[in-house]
Length: 129
Length: 348
Image 1 (cartoon, rainbow over the protein chains, first blue to last red):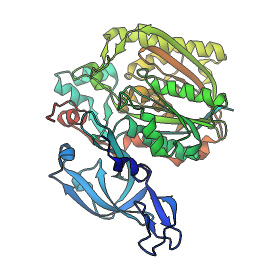
Image 2: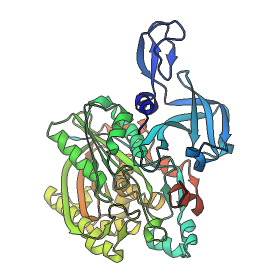
Image 3: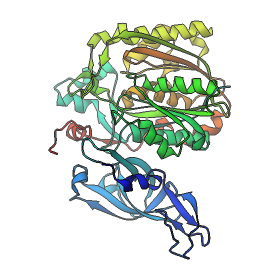
Image 4: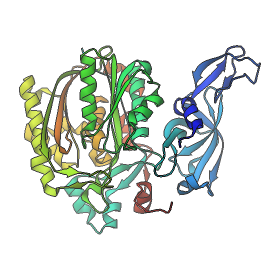
């Protein structure tokens, strides 16, 4: 059965939707119900920048079963151009291509499949610019 | 005026060279390259499919159109590699773009012309004032059986076109469709790879329909080949479109900007639409462009476009096709290619 969490997370996973606190202006991704900065519950809907910078990265060589055929693959902490830090896969690159400070852009990719007959789950990843 | 208000393409970064495939199957690469006029082709990453390609192409089209995705009233994806047998690719694409929920969605399939099917219907809906904007996408992760001639050409990529009445960059002057029951290429339900009729795919299929549609739209519109700045024909290989264009009276110079198959391969539903997008990247205001698709089964859709001055304002707002073709290429060997294309049987 499709995961209810996957359906709920579509706005942020598909469209990078974020929440900006109306009171203090702090940006949250994924969106939160209560601002961790000032406690306000009022937010404006906004989006992450589609580009960012690698702050840190690592290569996964022993992966969970759903990702075993993709090894080695890169995971990075990326800071979007509007200041939000996101843990994300960096795809379409070789391990030696990754460097702290390199620019990336967010792209829409397949995340995993729920077996051969289940739904296909999509979301954001990044590629080097 | 009804026409295209935004366009965009997407090609995967992975490539495999003709030599690599020829070596695997004991074929002479020089003969294959000369016969098909192909050098390499795009390969989808393991996390790419028709839906992800469609989303990226459509995002580029939205950058050029500069419209609110919520104003898109119809969204059609043409492909012969929809990831789901039942569940429209367009639903995921629309959700990813922010075009839901007030949008009409359908997936199209007509072998290699499903993309222009979508364009034809999108144009018609806008012209009829049923929707303000309609988004048409042609995208594929094409299938070709191991060792078959199709394996040298079947590639991945796609293009998206937003039709509207305001901010038109390429006006649709005329359309024509030419269709018969011709069993030249097919894939039965549940079959992994398509089959084709070998040489039967040439004269009675590709050339009959391409030439039939092109001659008909030229007769209908009154234009002659010399009136066009550019012409784009479906590209199953390098040779067929150049031969078809020459028979119609077009020069190689008119076809060259859209003749991207030597570096891209045949992206099936994305083939002629992506050649057309490459042509839009360099076309000037008032240029006339002829686009003729071909889908096995078989049929051709023909369009005549006239460029407007707005093209100069929008073409640089998204990555151009030449850049996608020539930059960031990652070459695969045949083993990696077989893994990426799911040709290796794995345990559950």
